[in-house]
Length: 387
Ligand code: SOE
Image (tube, rainbow, N blue to C red):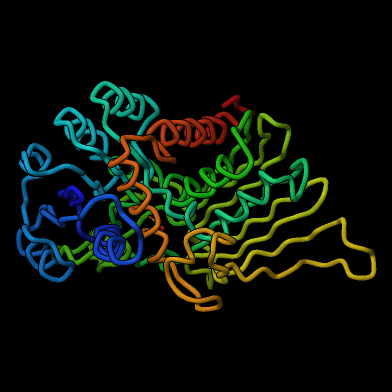
């Protein structure tokens, strides 16, 4: 009989909902080496977390994260809280001998991330930062194609992550817009994702030049309803200062010589959660658009001149041709955003049972944070910065 892993999840809003779906679905669609018990969900608002426990399928609800982290029955702690509490919770969980999954960005500073790495390594627990987009089948397949040399030596990595949820100046000052809680704005929230995909698909960053901008500098404080979901809410009459970036842009060089061009913005009207990546190499190119996430476009320069073009690969072929998709549906029955969390949690659970590392680890989270900080340093100094 497979062992049972009891999960305690801290945080119950958007990522709490996405991870809960992952914990519920992973056992039904992926061959897990353990049973999963959705033991306890934890949050600060008693009514909110109680409702979330019922709605999302958790056995228990708690408002005391330390009790959850130290509960003798808990094996895994899944952290989905705002960024400023990741380190404290993750270090406590590791010190309690729990395996730790933490949402991105891992911490607020490189030093905090290093402290988290030290804690998980000292306690010999499995650790992962939830960069779920690595486990989009098309992205994982692009990684395989790159490793097989399909596009040869990489010259360019161009990535854009564009949203538009705060273009309205009346949108309130939610936690993602407060430096003390989020660390940065679009930069740490969504640039972190395309920095991670750059590290995953291309390699380590060597040097960068950054630009950051805040378009709207004052916003209404959230009203007392506390209905803000982090991505929504209502503003009162009082105004407050926005202390983070609305957009960040980066040019840079990878250690392997490839050039990077990144843009992360929350001010691209019409782009709701759009990630577009193009990688150009010596033998071909790859192109991905999250708004069409089951497709990967591939230009193969070895094709005869009269039939060259971007092949449109539908990444739904089971039987090991394409990653993860075989666990879901027959070819052509496409999947979505929520499945990337199922893939992430399934890989994490099996790594926990095997006692093996699973990428991206907390070390990846720390290296991501180093790039984030280098961009902020560069935007401040208007100088190039070595990562
Ligand atoms: C808000 O930008 C957000 O929820 C990010 O925090 C997530 O990481 C991303 O997957 C969706 O958008």
